[in-house]
Image: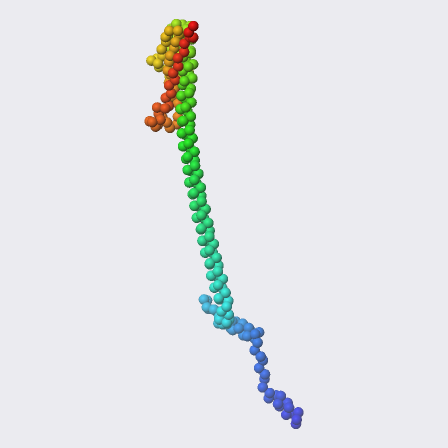
Length: 212
C-alpha cells in the first residue's frame, strides 16, 4: 500500500517548467522569423524587436555617419583652400615675372639705342678724318678737286656714310675739308621725334700737307 501511494504521488506530481534562458529566447525568435511570412518592404517582427532592444547600434551608426560627413567636408574645404592659395601664388609669380621681363626689355632697348648713338658719333669723326686724308692725297697726286672728292666720297659710301658735295672743299697746300654724315641704327629712337635728331652724327675733319 505504501508503495502504491508513493507511485500515485509521483504520478500526480505536476511537470516542472524548464527555465527560460538566452538560448531558448533565441530559438523562439528564430521560430518566429521562420513562421512569419515576409512582405517586401517590411521588417520581420522578431528582428524589429531585437533592433528596438539595441538602440545603441543605431546611435553608433548615426555618429559614424556624421563623423564621416564632417571629415569629408573638412577635407573638401582644405583642398579648396590649398587650391586657391596655389592659384593666387601662381598668378602673383607670373605677374612678377612679366613685370621683370618688361623692365629688362625696356632697359635693353634703351641701352641698345644709347650705345648705338654714342658709337656712331665717335665713328663719324674717325671716318671723316680718314676720308679727308684720302682726298688730300688724291689732290696732291692729281691736282684735281673733283678727283679728290670722288675718292673721298667712295670711301665714305663704302663705310656707310654720306658725303654731300656741298660739304667738301679743296684749297691751297692740298688742304681738304669735309663733313660726312652717319646715321645710328636704333630700335625705337627713330620713332620718337625728340630722339631722332641724335641718330644723325656729323663728322668734320681737315687734312693738308705740312707747311714747310
